[in-house]
Length: 292
Ligand code: MN
Ligand code: MN
Image 1 (cartoon, helix red, strand yellow):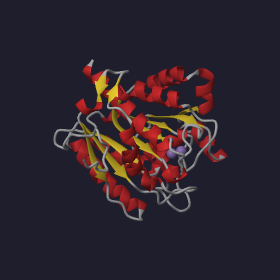
Image 2 (cartoon, rainbow, N blue to C red; image 1 turned 120 degrees about the vertical axis):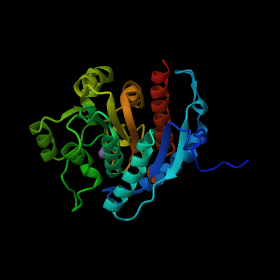
Image 3 (cartoon, helix red, strand yellow; image 1 turned 180 degrees about the horizontal axis):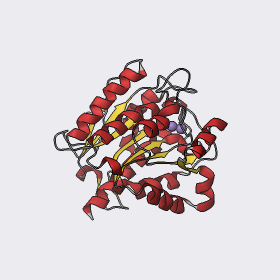
């Protein structure tokens, strides 16, 4: 029996699929540790660990129409790569399917967000929720507009002001001031710790007031004790259960999803596993809400 390098339970053809997973193996602007280009294939490799059945939702992954399209073509140039990833994501949404991108670094998120926005029938309702330790609100970083430290800024400037981030705990003074001046809605990791993830979810949900949410999971929102294999790990983060709770709550209102910034080289064996598990929990939660 051969085991292909694909999510083993993403067994449906593209034509039949409702969810299309694809990798964006690019880490060219990573500021600290590179290596997230290896995350998509590492996550495919570790996915074999998980049973296909979800007792929580009484659903089997093999009954959900999921296809693994492989990886987008990338180059050394971030702008060129973003254009190619955009075209791939746009194809998926134009075909009426739900895109799930696996980074790669967070800069890649701009492409599927733009694709989902361009295809969104209710543009005024389009919103973006980011789980991240970092603001990513710089206009440019190290001479690059599309550096991974800038992705949220460009989403807010170019695509939508309906934006919330959860888990923030790192950034230069200018980013904290910029966020406050511009009235950007964010919840720090300490907010989550002090008021509880359920309350933060409720407030974020009310603020976004949208049923066309793109959800971006920068894995460094997690505490490095849960997820050490990261490009820019930041202590005092969210727990695995808090992140799962947020994914489960928002999944029913989403039109696109990504998981980014896993860096297998620095993993001790749990980070890619957790990223894969969270992606699956997201799919189960969204699918369960549709069937009820
Ligand atoms: Mn980020
Ligand atoms: Mn981050």
